[in-house]
Image (cartoon, rainbow, N blue to C red):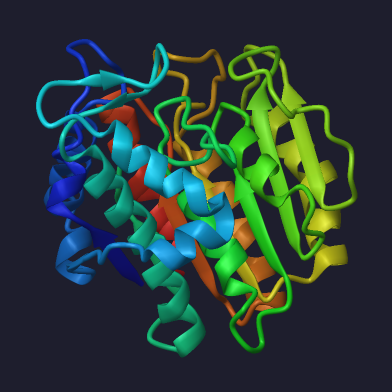
Length: 304
């Protein structure tokens, strides 16, 4: 297993009190070190995504427009939740670059599994709109570009963040070669694109208070048959851990063992269809302790 991160991902600044703060990544990397994860899997430096890959997914104007909005100093609000500081776009480029490098690693045979410990997250960024803390949709960018690699005919994106992956749905809704499965608290933010009903778009809304048993039942019922039907050559994960019972932004009641369970199940499916190839990218998770312990559980299953 490979783990990618980049120091510039910490340099993406947000207003004081904002939940998607640099401390998320600082604490996570410290926890990975303290638990010995990085002894076994040393951190690798993530490259930047290329503009060609971004433009292939978001469209040619979007990347340029983000650059125009970048402040020289201070903070710039893109919407009430989403901010840019002078190094935010750089951080997002490294976050997307980590996922794309991971895709090339697993397809090239360097390793079967990759985890990207990066920020800002990406799954809310739509085709031409940043939102929900997200600037570039790293996982969707990687999926769309992966289809141009020989031997990769179908990709699955599995999103278990507590918030619906509206941006990923927006970018992939017209591409039946990309299966998108998203489980999420509903009704809840962002409240967009969750009602799209297409064979390759699997939305799994769950009520506030959902705990492990109901979560596992819904995933088993909705996701696994879709993956068996799609038979992906590559699996990408939008790995959000804000469904944890201690997370301050939502009301799911998941625990670390639920993240171990879903990862273990996905590994088995990847072994069946995708030659074991999985690239996982950090999305949400805003209680620092729960984020650290949940990611460790995820990695324990991912490395198996």
